[in-house]
Length: 335
Image 1 (cartoon, rainbow, N blue to C red):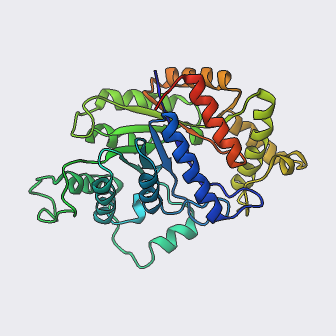
Image 2 (image 1 turned 120 degrees about the horizontal axis):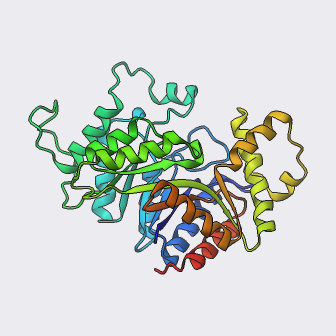
Image 3 (image 1 turned 135 degrees about the horizontal axis):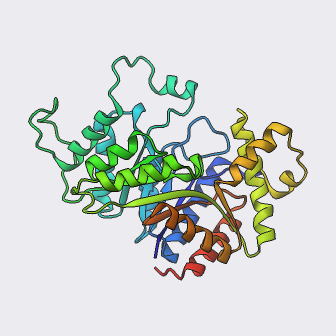
């Protein structure tokens, strides 16, 4: 059976605030732990009023502390902005305190021109993405490559276990980096949708995979927007709020909140927004638990995926808690 995981954005619902959003994500993580989900990841999003998760490493430390078994991860750390050495130290600290429960999801998204400029102000030299990943792996594994420019440097604390590494991608260079370094790979279906390029990237990853200390065999995940409710009608109403939010985001707006079902119901989409939503529907699974289960299983079959990462972006923490509970029951997973 395909493993079920969650990627949460810490949504700031209409009428709520960021502090409450972070606490609600913590509630969801505790619930996912009790239900038997395998992983719970949090996002790195900057300059977004409606998303409270800007620093996944800090959030992960708290979430790992309040949960017991579930793996806690980043979806992901956008490493072009950061020092590979500091990323390695952050995740060694997490792994030291919560051994065999930490996932380092690595991404390459710049996050917008203004964010990119602020995070990289006064930096001149820039390492390649491949070099950054190689450096992080060297520090996390105490690699003995005599050619490395910082060969005598180690990342503290020295520990016996290693975080899982996942390369996040949509069919680009992350595929080859994951295969070459023997890490897991997750395809961003929620961002790219179903395409021959995506399917080819996974085939290429499996063919080129080199066993490592991280994985002996290829390990593929697929991430998808998911809206679950007791009935298809209720799920569609929740999805309308998600579609409105995404229409705002994808038309260069920065909404102050994640809209309610009522706000979505009273909103009239313009032609451009409506076109965006039609594209978005192809990247989203919406429905009752049985329907969503069938769609997830079909998606996993298409991608030959070992794991599925659901992104439950729909309004209201109680709706999200109910949705992930219904899905866990449909799949029959247990803690």
